[in-house]
Length: 388
Image (cartoon, rainbow, N blue to C red):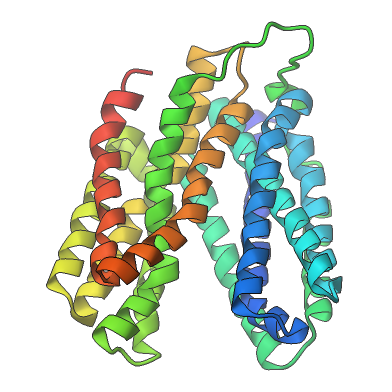
């Protein structure tokens, strides 16, 4: 098999993994209201259960990088996808609050494990093929999440049970994963056995790169969690109009990620991160200062365009740092896990922090925090990543 064909097949397999990860996330979020109703739990109880999902994500991130280093990212991606599909079935089978929290913990850990593995294998493909694919892969995640949400909304609208819904999704996951079983790159390409080797302290550089990702993640989370609430409560938008900021944000994210690899090749990933941070920071703050529903839509559109490629580029940079600075000591998968863990922490702490600030100073002005963080990311990324 020619190398070009091998890379093309691997790209299909990785694309499939990203779509599956996104579709399962979209499926999950689309049925939360039904889960709350079926189990008759309060908003606070559901909030605790969602916190358990985040704890599961942190658990998965804590060991997934080492598993990929030990076994190679290909088998962890492949088998992790099966386990992820099974974890969704467990959520569908939950019939009380205790089992719900346990299955949420498992689902979070499985999502994180497969997430790190598929991103690590994407980095392997980028290195082997000497091309950029990461931004496009993340666009596929966004499309998968959108599709999972739409399908989930249809199932919910037609009163189809959660168990039947997740069984259908799991069947598609298992079938599509089986079809790509022989398309991954060899596991040996990124195996990095750690037994018997001198352990080094986790490089601080990955922690700093993770902080840059955290700045972007808080902005992404703010758009999803607070856009509609800001439009409706602060600017008296109708229910439909209040959804437009997030719709525009999501569309901009997909569009930006589809063009991201080409833009990174032309302008360089560093310029993409810096430029994206400036667009997000200036556009978000400008829209908030202008105000009105038009200002909010503009703000969220700018945030989507600016932030769309940041996390994919940072993951690629983490792989480059591991390859160039810590070859033989620190695997790319471990770097991705560290950066992911810190960046995704922004999705955990961002929403409640901004909600508290919103109560204190008003949600409109609280949204200036992610704008400021985007500017900090833009100004800080070049001196940090430029020294790698």
